[in-house]
Image 1 (spheres, rainbow, N blue to C red):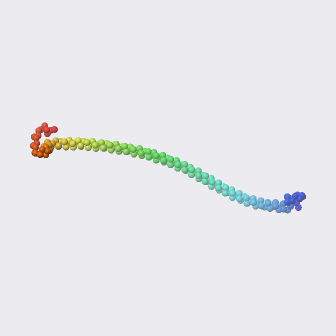
Image 2: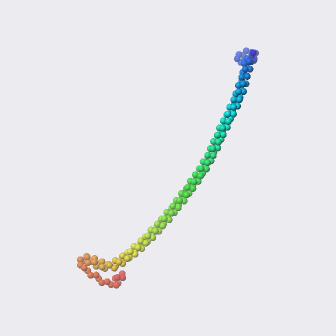
Image 3: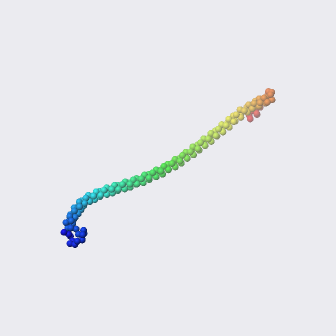
Length: 162
């Protein structure tokens, strides 16, 4: 038996074949529908897991970027503090060097003044001592030059006080 009473070839299937095809299609559809539900659940679970991991990764990345910004801010502050400490240390060092230099100059000036005073007193003492013996040394030198002994001149009180 044919569905359409005309002979149109394979386009007119027999009714038994059409019923068998509909039954088989229904069975396949029900089986595939159940299978597709399971596949959909698995895909949905996978998407949720993937999205969850993706969201978690984004959260971790955002947290890491926030911490990186904090660390950079702390490092910038530390560099600024280090520069300020270095600048203060240089200023204190320059002040200490200037103070030490001034102290050294003061000590050198004191030592030079002391040495000049000692030299002056030693010169006066040497001059006074030489004045006592100048006439005797002159007589002895003159005796050597002449080659004969010379008698020293008598001392006068005016000559001794010079």
